[in-house]
Amino acid sequence: MTPENKLPTLLDNRGENKVLTAFRKLLPYSRQWDVATGYFEIGALLDLDGLWQPLEGMRVLLGDEMTKRTREELIRALRVQSEESIEAAKEKDDSLAGLGAVRQALVGGQIQTRVYTKAKFHAKGYIMDGGANSLTDFAVVGSSNFTHPGLTQNIELNLFTTEQHQINALREWYAQVWKEGEDVSAEVLKVIERHLGTVKV
Image (cartoon, rainbow, N blue to C red; front, side, top):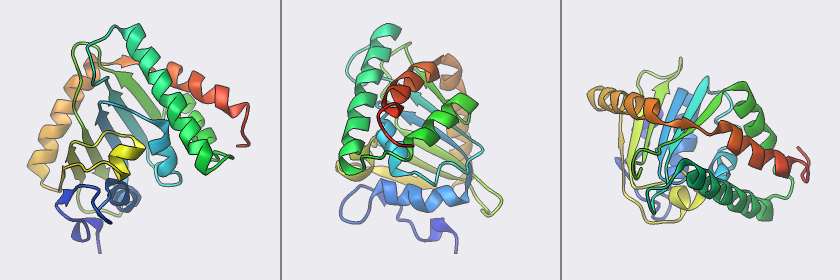
């Protein structure tokens, strides 16, 4: 049975209806993952450790929901969010085994990260291209940021779809805003490498 037959149309983090659970079910059937998020936490990748690594590629386009900022201020905010996310993950697992995999993926280009600086970027959407073991593509669009609280704790409202015309429209939109983003993979990598010196990976 394919995952779309098991997932509800609406994902809101109430009870067992977690966005994180949906991603854990969908990733084994996916080849490529495009993420749009106001906030980004490395902890969200650690929550999905072992599931995103088989992907051929992953793109993360992010912004800062509070204000329109300069690139330098956006990067500073990204560093703070990443530091806090890693520290929170350390409290659950001091070894942070998945952090080395994130570093390797950033260095090798499997994960690419860009920041949107042209305007306040408030979008949240997830587009998954189906892999060889899937007959369809998937998308989740709604209010969940790519953060641990956004995927597990906050009451959110997200629509899960396999409708191809909707996914095609999302792909076109993502391609446009991705082109307008600025690469920040090196900045994310600097944060990770600082922590890799203090944990076993």
